[in-house]
Length: 180
Image (spheres, rainbow, N blue to C red):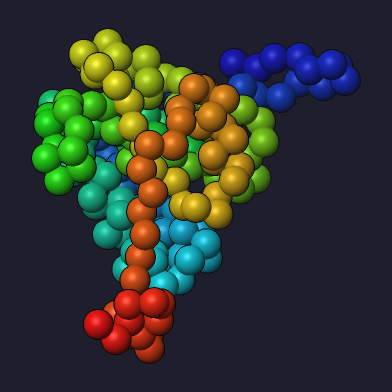
């Protein structure tokens, strides 16, 4: 599928669809990119990628395929997997003090394809699928310094409801109550 853009050139349009068996493994590089980006946002909070991250993430995503409460959508252009959304349905979570919800766990588009609306298309389809499956609300988390993602999520009507705070126990004690 292609569409003509204002300049008269033709560009392929990415298709958004459910991931197929075997494609979870092919998403490992994007999963590793997600890990690297988050680690760059805050190395003390987020895992760093290792040589095995691509395979481990791909294996994890592959295992999610076919699970009744999991959703894995892919953006495909010219046969390449260029983005994905991973989401799921969860029941009541007393640790998070919330009722049942659809949760978007991952949303990523490969760097060369960012800024073309693919993240919005993936998120829109994930929300639609979670609603169809009965999710009464959809929640997600984003790195505090990931302002581009926050703008995208806000444009869909998401609003901040929780703030995660981290204390690194390997750092010298800090703060007013550090010595208590």
